[in-house]
Length: 568
Ligand code: ZN
Image (cartoon, rainbow, N blue to C red; front, side, top):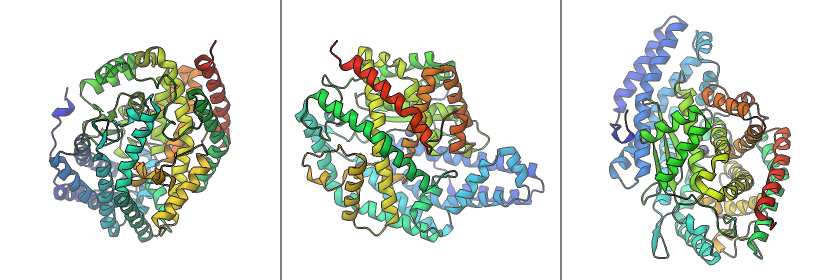
């Protein structure tokens, strides 16, 4: 069995790759039957996998050590060549859309391939290649600034991930100092970050106009391949959050304030949930993986086989290190047909959130990785996040393996956090709609807009006189705003779906688990709302979905609060 560290990286020759792709496209045109065209599509699919696997391998090795100059250079190479090769995919898509044998192609692959192709066509024209390259470069610059963070705190040299353990310290003065130290880093980067963001907005707006869109909101939705809902649906969804979730979140914060015995809950207190301290995993990375192995063995035979593979083939890099990129992600190596999980364990309960979340993504591609065509391996992002966020909830009963008797604290904190997240997700999304519909705004206009949106969705938020944050800058830490615009609401859409799965799981585990495995297996072969339907869930754009979970969540929280906080 091949181990990840033995995977051989070799820079693909992009000229050879393009020439062969072109050759296959010509072959596609010359075929005189649908069956033969389908056969050529399969060849194109195999050909693309080699390139994509190398690009993914490079991305992984670059993010696990951003100081490795070899992979940094390779990454720059892909940033430049990737957009020129997009031209070939564009040609491929237009050929299948216009094929005289389209019906046979649809009969073989299903209609979703045509939906994806039609969306992709609208988002590309050779004239935007330089803009795409500029965009990639700007995103890389931002990622580098974040990864370069070196924060001196209590004699330690910390990064944005390792400082988090002090941000949830039992000692309030330490929490505050850690949060201020982190924001001090962002304040020092303000000018560079604001410039990068402004350039990103401008290049994206320019790209949208070149492609015939009014603004980047429209292009952004197409780039996300959103085919069965629009900006009005999302606006309605945000309004449900404001009306139905913000009050629950405010109540959670108020109870937290009382529990902690504070006069006012400041921004640096929000993540600190229990007076005796947040629960943290009872062991290190290796120990957590061992416990996770037990958990996935007990959950199902499929998750057992899946996790064994992840562990034995070295497909996880979990611990935070200097120079490692921030955050967590899961990706898929198409040629090798294996997922890879990247995270920054820092000894907090967040480690378990990330592990179960990314394992949900990885399990999904483990199930769908054999899809007929690469376009079907991953669904659109909001559907992907159903897989990951539901896995966080399906694994809740096993948390005593990681937290011992503090498992109940973890469970309460996890659900409370999931609810608290929804208004923040809506705020980020509304902010992006503002930013891209008014691309000529100054940075100060953007700060002001953020502050107003924040007050709408996060009315409890207090910055304790930290002037930089009072000004409306909190969003500059949010990587998604830079790297994948309009992604963020996907977490909120998926959370409302995951909550429904959670309820179904409590009421009928077998049904919930089977539906879950089913939607993992179908991957991206159907659209978001079709996946929601096949999962047996209500669409998050309908009030019914909220009605289905809001009462349930309130009852669950009240029950747990009794167990946790009542003295008798
Ligand atoms: Zn995710």
